[in-house]
Amino acid sequence: MEIALIISALGLGFASGFHCIGMCGPIALSLGLTKKQATNFYLQNLTYQFGRIVTYSILGGLLGIIGQGFEMAGFQQYLTIGVGILLIVMAVFSFGGKDFASKIPFLTSSLLKVKLNLSKLLQKADYRSRFATGLLNGLLPCGMVYMALTASLAASGIWQSSLFMAIFGLGTLPFMFAVVLLGNLMTTAFRIKILKFIPIMMIILGSLFILRGMELGIPYVSPKSEAMKVIHNNSTDHQEGNHESCH
Image 1 (cartoon, rainbow, N blue to C red):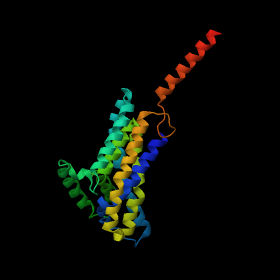
Image 2 (tube, helix red, strand yellow):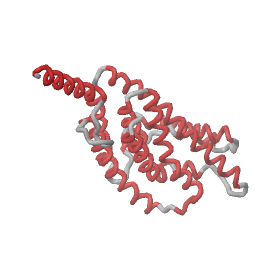
Image 3 (spheres, rainbow, N blue to C red):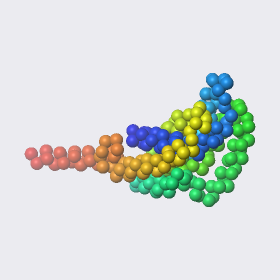
Image 4 (spheres, rainbow, N blue to C red):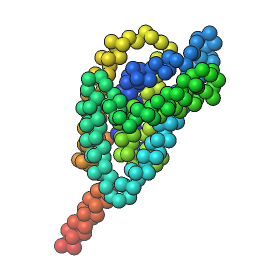
């Protein structure tokens, strides 16, 4: 996977971590974890977080099928630019501190079902329940996750998109882990301020995807595709051959 995509995945995860503090934080706080047994506390917390990352990776792999199809059809460049534009559109709808996913009507019923199952799992305290809680948490409608999934299409492959989402999940880990550690020390006012900053970061990342798709030859930011490199090399070899034949 390209360095630019890895940085994008971590950047999205980093921004989503702040977002998750406000949106998914209450679920993490409902786990009922206590520090009486420190080892058990950290392991249960990590088990829950690992469940989320597994769900993100599976969803990324599924989206990767579409990305791979675009690459095989030779439309990867246009897909990457489209992903960048879509990220910017999503970011615009996220201004005001609201998650744009909450504005999608058909998600309401699915959200209710997931929450019902989550409420049952939260009553249990074993590792299996913590992992299952994380898995379901990863299915909750979330604008930031949808942004990451959209971006994972640009990875152009099943395992690449899955890896992209795994890195994204790792990017959210420090903040979600900290939520359980710090509890309610993060005030509502602080969360609102963070949420206002996120759309700006998304616009920046969306712009980077557009630049990447334009293949301007800028190292790491907008590198030439392999196909373009081959065409350029063939053209150079052809010109050199003509130059030698003139002599």
